[in-house]
Amino acid sequence: MNLSKVKLVVSDMDGTLLNSKGEVSNLFFELFEQLKKKNIIFCAASGRQYNSIVSKLDAIKKDIFIIAENGGIAKKNDDLLVLNLLSADKIKKILPLLQSIDNSHVVLCGKNGAFIDTKNQKFIDLFQEYYNKYTIVDDLSSIVDKEDFLKIAIYHFTSSEKYIYPIIKDFDKDLLIKISGKNWLDISDKKANKGNALKKVQQILNITKEETMVFGDYHNDIEMLKEADFSFSMKNAHKDITEIANYATDSNDNFGVEKILKQLVEN
Image 1 (cartoon, one colour):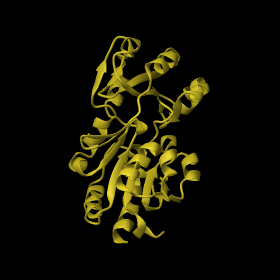
Image 2 (spheres, one colour; image 1 turned 30 degrees about the horizontal axis):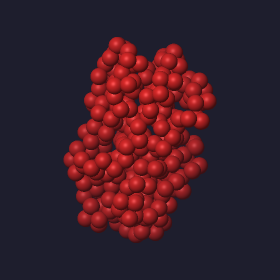
Image 3 (cartoon, rainbow, N blue to C red; image 1 turned 180 degrees about the vertical axis):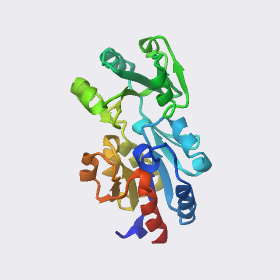
């Protein structure tokens, strides 16, 4: 690998930059400062809510680009770079079906906050890790016309791939459906993916695919991995990601991202 070409580093969060405890390592922050000195730009790209990403990367938030909600929104500080809304009509069509799936919980991910209608404390405790700003309502269908929404996220306590995807896969003609983790599945507008958001960031920075490094672990990372010559799958990645990425690194619990960034800095 000729890492001297790299000008932009993009990393997924959960299962990638974050360890299994949802933590960013001190080593990453040290490496970030070294990347910054070399004028290499960092972008976090996640299915998480924007506020949640900022909270994890608070120390460097002013210096980075953020792609949130799987490409539904992208920002640099207060500058809005990308906004892909999911229409109310499309939400209304699929919401009743989602609400009928056993052992699952639906999140409407708004531009300014998330909405849930469950009282299940086990789910709420888990959900708060990904969504810092949220409101509990009596009925999600009652707010569809009152807010701007970026995506729908559905959580299944056993497996999103096994118990949610088969039920809704036929909606993929009109919607972008992504298995974003073992338990999560995301539904967005067709244009809203991390790859399209990354293209916008690359365009703003005048940085090419050949100068971009990307790390990912799940299906919602596929499009952005294709926008980088230096595409890395994590050791803990879904097998589909391992097949797509050009390179591989260690797991998120064994500093997979940091090991490559260290090489990048030393190069």
